[in-house]
Amino acid sequence: METAGARRIIETEGLTKRFNGFTAVDHVNIYVNEGEVYGLLGPNGAGKSTLIRMLTTLSNPSEGSAKVAGFDLVRESEKVRETVGIVSEKMIMYDRLTAYENLRLFGKLYNVPKKEMEDRIEELLKIVNMTRWADEQIGKFSTGMKQRINVIRPLVSMPRVVFMDEPTLGLDPQSTADIRDLIKRLNEKDGLTIVLTTHIMNEADMLCDRIGLIDKGKIAAEGSPSDLKGRIAERGNTVVELDVLDAPVDAAERLRAVDGVKSAAQKENCVKVIVSREDAFQDIVDAAGRAGLRLRNASVSQPSLEDVFLHFTGRAMVDEVKDKVPSGGDGHGPWRAPRARGR
Image (tube, rainbow, N blue to C red; front, top):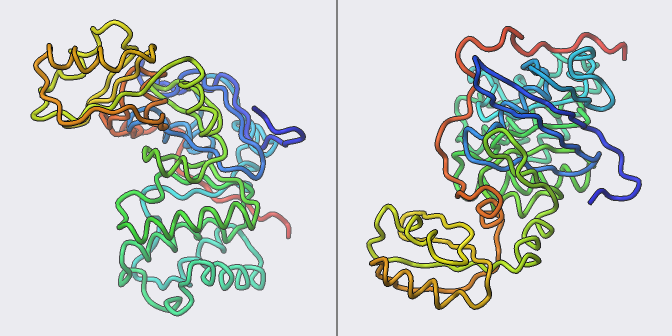
């Protein structure tokens, strides 16, 4: 539900992207309110990164339209670029330059006035506790340290919206926690609007005000984390979790045939089943035995965002295909820094 008086900073209408007959993003209608963290959740190949590429002008839509901060995505693309920042899963930095030099380089690309840029860089380095390493070459940093600089890099130009594409991908637990804390701080204290893509459900649950579940290029469901999880309970569904010994690869498929089972998904030796009857627990256990599944444990659990995804799509959040733009791109060309803003 939209908050009363909230101002929309992103709106899409039928936004679509096709590649040689393949539809990567399929008539997506979403909005993002100013000052919120909006999460895009889905497996690799679902269309998350392609959607972000369009919203940041890196790729032209095949169909539909969108506005970012009131600017048309295609007709006013340069104005859009002045408004947004991008944290991509690939770190865009130069190893031979120091942390400070990297940040200054990107500030110059955006024509940020020198004094304003220096003050902003100093402030950002403090936020991520990297001041003492400001004059060290990036190439000497750990992956976690590099990602701290990568996250603050687009903030030098003071964008209104930052798109973060898998910002914790491949990080160790401590670095992951640090980046998540930074995202919270930037949103809560600085009021920054953040669009976050991730396939880590608890990360989205922790950080996002609202979430769009995307599957096969379409938005399967949208709402706050609590609202999405509540939809399962409101419809009388129950989540049953089965811990199976030596589970066959078709364990979930065997359980889908049971009366009352809406969907089932398997991850290694765990099978999660969503059923539409409260009294179906024993039926599921009995059916598992008849199907030859050796149960170690069975329990009823509270719905999670992963269960929500399973409910709306009929499958688990499984990474199947990397969500990459096909080689050769779409002819739109690389990101171009905006012209001087006359400041």
